[in-house]
Length: 246
Image (cartoon, rainbow, N blue to C red; front, side, top):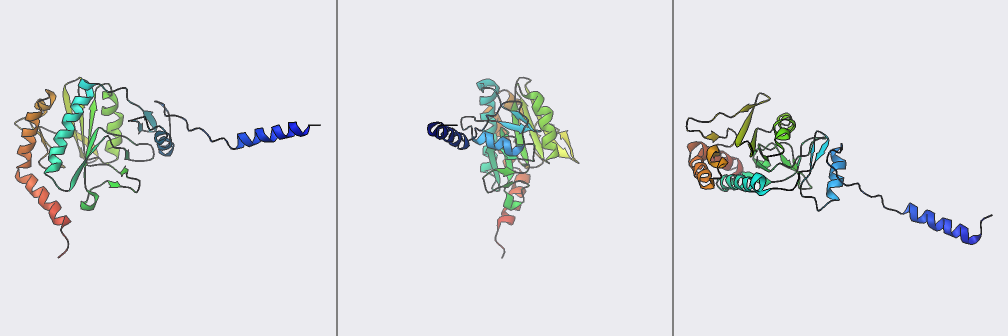
């Protein structure tokens, strides 16, 4: 028979075990998770700055290099920011998580949306996350080119993201895809070599200037786009939608 002391020790042991809080496993690259479990683990790791769920698989990028990512990313955000400043009704996001579907929660390098109240296809949920495909997504890709041009491209196409830009830094190339009848088609440059958005009139890009990090040339081109009749008409549409009923 157990002594009173042995019984007390056993009760204490059971009590400790029953009140132990389960540990949330850390995110690991290559994990196969549901979106709910991905978010649970991501939120428990505040030190992690970027993780993505693509087709149910966790991707976590390596440390960021200045030439291959930091500097190109800054130039793209500046380009989009200048357009946003002159275009009421659009918003720009930097490394923001998107809840696309049950197996995909990417965190693209940049994006631009039309305000939901003005007819944008994405919305912001009660937790502050973007839900649904933005009108434009941009990725800066060096070591991640294969993912950007294959798996992510299929995911973005399936979720009706209207335009998708990839800056392939090591390849010195810009891919700009436009969704047409359910497929991505390359955006064709103008006779002057410019790329002009179909979704956002006036969002013009001089790819050669961007590739040689000539930010002044990039901004000069987008200013030309902002002065175009197409951009003026685009802004007028938003103002008409935003105007209170008479």
